[in-house]
Image 1 (cartoon, rainbow, N blue to C red):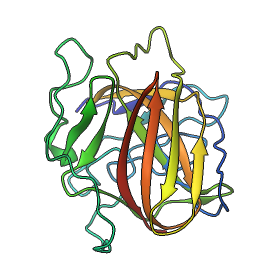
Image 2: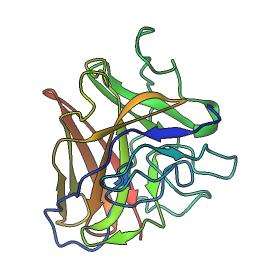
Image 3: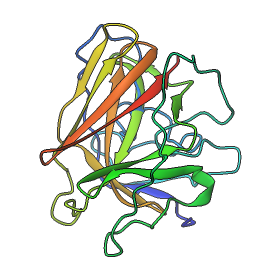
Length: 217
C-alpha cells in the first residue's frame, strides 16, 4: 500500500436521502463524514477543501473500502449478504490491481462496465456516524469507462432499498474520485436512513451493479 494512503481528490457534496433520515453510510464521500473504510479508510475532504490523505489500512482495520468494522459483528441469517464468489478481474490496462491487496480481505465484484470491492464474508457496516441524512458511509466503484483525468466528478449515482423494511435513499450524481493501492476509483457517499438489510445499487453510464449489505447503527 502506498505510504501516502488514499487521496480524495475532490470535495464531496451533500447526499439527499429519500427516506425518513436518521443515519448515513458515507461510503467514501466527504460530505457524509463517514469513517473511511478499512477501519475508517479515510475521511473525504470537506466542501471547499483540497485533497486529503486517507490513512492506510492496518491489520485491525476493516478490510473493504465499503466497510468499517474492525471485528466481526452478528448479521441476521435472514440478510443474505452478497459475496464475491466469482471474482472479477480488471483488464491489465486499467489503473487497478488484478486483485485487491490481501489485507482488504476482499475481491472485485461486477463487470468491466462497473465493479466494486466486496469482503469475502460480505459487506457489514457498523458504527457509522449519524447525520441529518442518516447513517453515513462512503462507497467506491470502478469502471473501465472511467478516466479521472477527463471526469474528476464522475456521473455515478447510488440508491438503496431496504429488504427488511420500507426504507429508501438516493445519492444522485456526480460523485468524486479517490486513488490508493486499489487504483483509481469513483467515490460517492450515501445516507442510509435506518439500520437493516439493504440492497445497494450504483448506476454509471447505463451500467448498474447491486449488492446486499447489512447496516447497523
